[in-house]
Length: 353
Image (cartoon, rainbow, N blue to C red; front, side):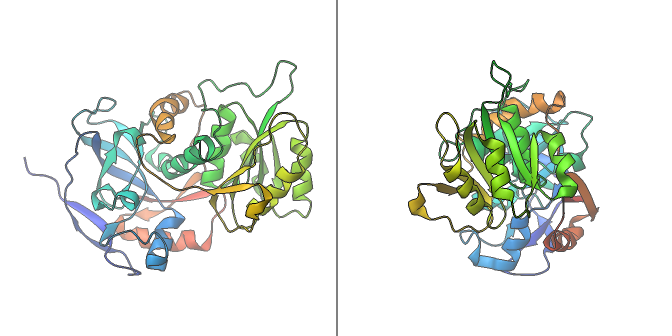
């Protein structure tokens, strides 16, 4: 049987623009791997940032490389030992080239090698475009929320754990800054499913959206009273952790932690997905930048393997934010970089294939 032709959008060397469309080897899955025919690809800030910054960002990456972490498509081959999937299954998954230095695991091509434990089946009601907004956000938030080196929260369940105690009041609370972003919205949903009340921040136009995802209170991230508002919202409850996105948000959350009054042990950890901060290390508050380490022991594994398939099927967890399709074809990826670089609100930039 003749293997199909594969094409990829290559980053051939440091800071090369635009991405170069050209042949890529048709991949063969190794044990525990799958091959997917991609139908939709999500674009992440790390993609255009790596192209622009070169060795300043992820300096270990070897060229030529195929970027792309968010993929959704149809399985065309399975490797030895794969038990959860078969050819023809619709899936979402994380492309892992930026950690493995293996271009076959990059998303920006027609056929990508995937790791079984970072892959989740798609119910028929979710389109490929909707699905590809999730993978890297799921990986990032799973590590930040549930990793023992980060917030170490309880894992989410289906159905969701109750957020109230026996007297009807919420006893455990988590703050998620930036709830309208793909990472923030995913963190809101996962923390809620794990049994925590979620307090979040966003622009006022996105308040209702973040509340639909599961936040009980949402505050204007630009408000001059934001710190006081957050302190009042979590007062009297156990503050189990903070998750932050955006420049300066860790500094605000550190003040909330310092001034918090509530039962139990107040978590001194802030999981930081991105953004600059200047929290003094001597304050006792630990700002933990989330490092994507793809190993089978990752806290993301039970999310992709156990929680997400059922949560998606039962519509407890929804793909968010909405996809904004820039175009169709590998040649549209560079254009999509530009769209994302200009900034989006409660949207995920997507390219169809």
